[in-house]
Length: 385
Image (cartoon, rainbow, N blue to C red; front, side):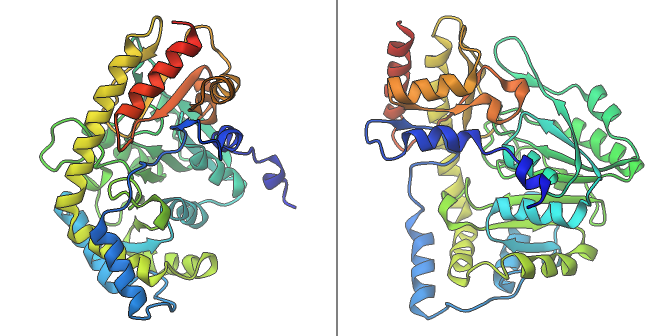
């Protein structure tokens, strides 16, 4: 086996979840998904497709109808994007891996902003890259911030790729439009590609004209060295469907199709039909999802803030409360103890980077916000409060 695989760390999120899966007494908030099912109109589209017998291979880049819908949807939110820049993928994580495979050779320098979902740092390592991390810094009250001077200094002409996830999983940190402008201008000057994971762009709680967090697609030109990753998972309640997409320079799309062929061949047709329905009903589905998640955030965060010594900020985007418990500095051990002793399933902070050691991630995407209240009660009891 390749040494890169042998050196690869297992997901610490999964390590905690595996300790509690199958236990009916555990309140699980460890994964980044809602416990609410996919909307009926989306499921019906998939069932109709199956009944039509659409169980065969599709184009590597996706159904033309879905690529067109993604282009229309993206253009409505950002600058115009043609279908010739779109590739449909078997999930957001597949989109990310395809992008890294397309851009990174062994020995290339990759810079990533951390803490971040561990797949984003593992993927360059799988390709044999030299990974450098620039850390967000915790601020007073539990918010996190980026030192732009440090980031730009880390990106040099030898940097092949910058990996950035904003809104960020797990911290909720979000880039400003001004920061994106500075990053894009700097990467143009150094010749560095940007891989932007923007799957949480619609899960944004600040007022904006387009209902989105700032996006590189608002400012980039079509041929900029920019690849943006999206997923149907979060904004459309479709985590288990494994459907995502890439936006890339038009000169790259054909070659991405070759990579899709040698990875998964294509996304399943009935899943893509569900994606078309999701996009066609986006104005019904996503605002309701976002309003509900805001209610969940505003239920959970004040309860955590009321606990003595707890540091937690109200996330501007995403679906997570990222917090620190005083006196519990080993995230993984704390998360395992919470499962075993309190029946509470959270993700350990150091799963997202060692700079987040001592922090815990709580996914607040709960169909019933009362589950969040119950979870805090279990945490309070475990803390002896």
